[in-house]
Length: 263
Image: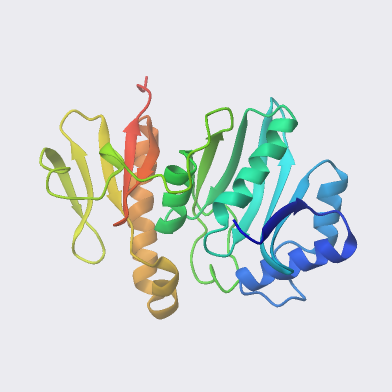
C-alpha cells in the first residue's frame, strides 16, 4: 500500500508506541495496556517479534508473535487500521516462515463476524478449537461484561497467500435460500431468527452470529450473553462431532465442515 511501511520493532520508543496503540484499540488506559511495553521487550528478547505498520509517520497497526514447538508459531495479538490487517499478517507470516515454521495459531472472539471473515476467508485459516471462557473475566472496553469464549485459528503458512480481495465462493458464500434448500435442522437465535442449519448429509452446518456483538454488548449485555451461550452450544457440539470452522459469509453465517469421524 502506498505510503505504508511494515518493520520489526526492537527499540524502547517503538515498543512503547505499540503498547499505547494496543491500549487504544482495546480501550484501556495507557497506564494499563493489554500488553505492557516491558512484556513486549521480553518477548522480543526471547525470540519473538513485534511488527509495526506505519502510514507515513503514524503507527497504524501492530502484531506480536512468538515461536513454538514443532515448527509452530503463535500470534499473541494483531490489530490494524482498516485495510492494513492483511499486510501486517503477511509480514508476520514471512517472519514465521524464515524461522522454519509451518503453521501459526491465534485466538479470536467467535461472535465478531468481521474478524472471523478476515481469518477464515481472507487469510484461509481454519477454526480448529473452541475454548470456553478462555481468559476468564476481562476488563477492557471491548470485552468487559462478557465471557471470553475464543476460537483457535490455525493458519497453514505453506499454502499460497490469498489475494487481499479474495471473495467467498461455494459453501462460504453469502447466505441465501439456495444454500439452505436442503437444510435438515433449524434452531432459533436470541433475536428470533434462525441460528443453525445442517445439511441432510451431515457434511456441513451453518451457524449465525449477531451483526455487531461489540455494539450489542454495550447496549444490551443480557442479550449479548444469550448470543454467547447459544453460539457456544452449537460450536461445542459441532467440534465434539468432528467439525471445524471453514468459512464466514458477509451476512454472518459460519460454515462448519466435518473434517473427521468421531470414534
